[in-house]
Length: 461
Ligand SMILES: [Zn+2]
Image (cartoon, rainbow, N blue to C red; front, top):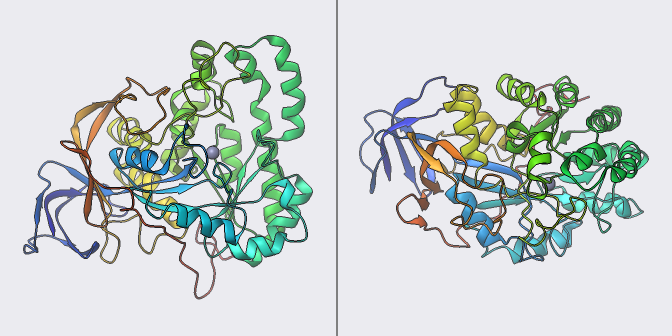
């Protein structure tokens, strides 16, 4: 197949490269100009062609909670939004992915379920820091993109890891060469703030007061100190404060992500809208948004992720913010948001757009031998966008089961015209999602050979 007349976003390039992409057996064979036809010809005239987006933080609740989301629905919505690879969290499926056997069971259960390629995270909760801890980490390490932990958890069945337990987990993670992901909020601080905030009522403002911004900074300081002592690789998920992001940015062994919801909404929106915008960690002060954008643009924040976690209509309604489900469906818009509010709004360069939506996550999770770049030898995962069109997001029309969405009706600059997974069109704007569940394959991280370096290219301790 030849994609011709394309404006191609090449790695690191500040301007699109006008040329052709040759695809053979789902792999990019060549990128250049005046390349001869090779089977089917796809005309990309006027379109920008980027590496398929990676959404490295989704909760698709599959198998286990089909009223909230499933892999067929969540991955179809991802494809429609320009995403070609998702990485699913371990604690929102049955079984939870916490050892080698449960990861293989989950992988096999999803083998005919995904429209896009998928990786898995393993998980360690405070209940699993026992004599079998090292065996679990060793079994999971070759299969998963990383191991997720919570410094504060809202789920009784997957409780938090305390600082002492982190000091046990991190050296094992280093030995078995796997990255530890952290939901970083300081439990000691949050638990007292939560008790005080409940007396303020059942509004968005009360919920905001229950998860103070300092809790993120305090937790990031603790867990990154323990990672440094162990020489372990760490990733902080869903950063919402510039102070925490600045700590992460200063450390060679630690990366961080933020999400469209922290870049777009704040605690005043939460007060106004209530339960549909309830997420944990909660939305922050209005001034954080511009700082997070700046840090995403200059590389201090590594990439964006959706933290896609829909609740049902019933779970996201009701009068009390305390009883509402915590999570929103962001998977359908995570790429479009970065395209629209980042690149097309002038906040991100073309090179940063590619980094934050695809390449940086591919590198962090060791998928960069196949994913994250339009380059010979990589999977032909491509998203074609029309930068001059617009998109009005319609949650009712999205394949996602997440119908209560703060993005419903939101106008985006740009439009996803086609999404291609390993050379096969899985979405086009005319026909909708045309890829079937099962088109997407499981992806495991590449193993390191040769001397190991940290993610930021600095030799490890
Ligand atoms: Zn999450």
